[in-house]
Amino acid sequence: YSSSSSSSPPTGPSRGRRNVADITQEEHDKRLAVQEKDNKWHKFVEGNLILKQGMLYKRKGLFPRRRMFLLTTGPHLYYVDPDSNVLKGQVPFSATLRPEGKNFRTFFVHTPHRTYYLEDPSNTSQQWMQTLEEVRDYYFSSHYSSS
Ligand code: 4IP
Image (cartoon, rainbow, N blue to C red; front, side, top):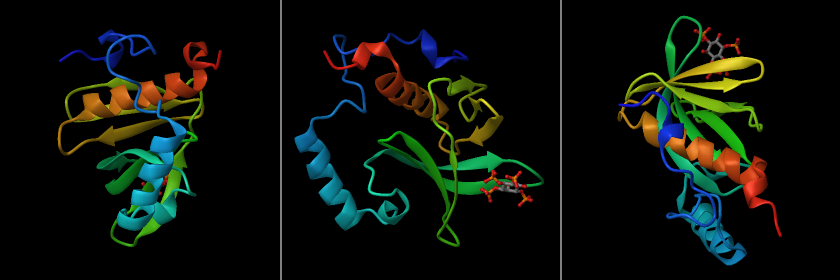
């Protein structure tokens, strides 16, 4: 296990697998239509396309809270209480958002005013971190600015 996913190869436009946020308008529209029809979390994401979703535990205060995390175009990272079906908040997305791995389950998301402490019960924290970095880089790195 390596503690930072930034050791993985860069996912710029010209190397290997495409960035998860780098989709054509046509693909976007097609996927959004499917999401509207089939995804029960669609109503929380303000019309954005969900790029990754999954149940995570968010620690703050006394108990870890089980939340559905929805990473979307925009970009946004929403979280919903799956029991009450209520949108509880968003992790503020910016160029300085930075995931940091602790182990397969636990990772942090650093933002300017708060560090989120998250746990992935499926032990795929690395995938979450990688996708967060991809989406951040797609929206905020000069790599992807239109030419
Ligand atoms: C709560 O803890 C929950 O963890 C909230 O998470 C969290 O809000 C609160 O932090 C925290 O005090 P208790 O219920 O044990 O008191 P959630 O909103 O997911 O239910 P956020 O959304 O900010 O993490 P505060 O400081 O934001 O109130």
